[in-house]
Image 1 (cartoon, rainbow, N blue to C red):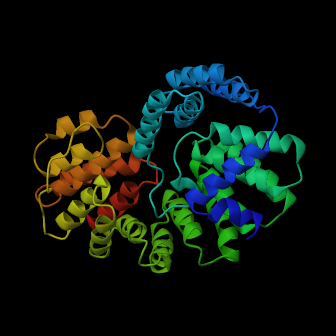
Image 2 (cartoon, rainbow, N blue to C red; image 1 turned 90 degrees about the horizontal axis):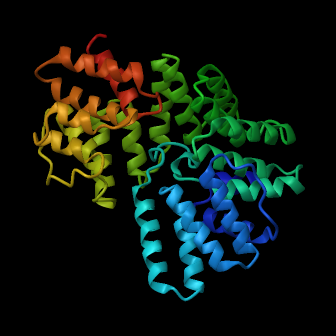
Length: 378
């Protein structure tokens, strides 16, 4: 497999092992300008561990975890060191904390690029690849890998710099062109993103990930017909075993007849995933077969309040109050619009319009809302 394939195509478990192996080979001090105080603490802990100061390193990892409760690597690394030091019970509790944090992470939807489907902070990876690049500046792989780590963290600007450096070394690499386009898309530079995806698709016209990104760029440019054309091809390219990805594409098209059987298959594989349960209710409702949720799950985690909404267990105001960021608000507005459609199309139109005005085009709800508005004649 090519260097590019290693960082863009390997399954998560293999790629993670490869990255850890690379990190172990870097037997020298990690040097990178930290972005935040907690990253500085984390890197100091890594340096202490490499120097053999295990107890101090464990304490410092604990400080990093306190400063950034979502920094999973801090919990896991502290647990590993405490295991070595014989503090097994404390280590076990830290492993459990890391496991719970990982369960709560949700990357991009499964129809999107492999790189974007990862989630979480990449502090250690960015540091490791920065160290490599201080010695090896003429290899494409470290630039791509670090760019991917930046992209996972939602930092498209430095990711774009790395992808452009890789393309300078090896111009025309379609996989890297697509990654560059994803960074441009994340930055809101939609015209450039669409053009760059065009270049990638010219080389690999049947690459499902490329088509997914280009469709979103085209949607952002209000080229709904062109976006739909890409999504339809992507749907056909995705194999049957990737039911959740196929479901997401069908939902973007607001093709609920296609989405429902895929959602049924996705639920069979992941029966606890609340999004597949929610989207199944959405599809059933839009097909004129409204159903109640099987149970009312805990309100402590999202999107469970939206399942309560379908069960008429929460009011509109209560649901919107629990939608504590822009993406959750868009998801709530979409469900409110779907539920309003049969009896109040004007209210549904208001909900869908608010999504199109405010939500990022990468969201399923943005694309579906545009199709719903088109169906309402808006």
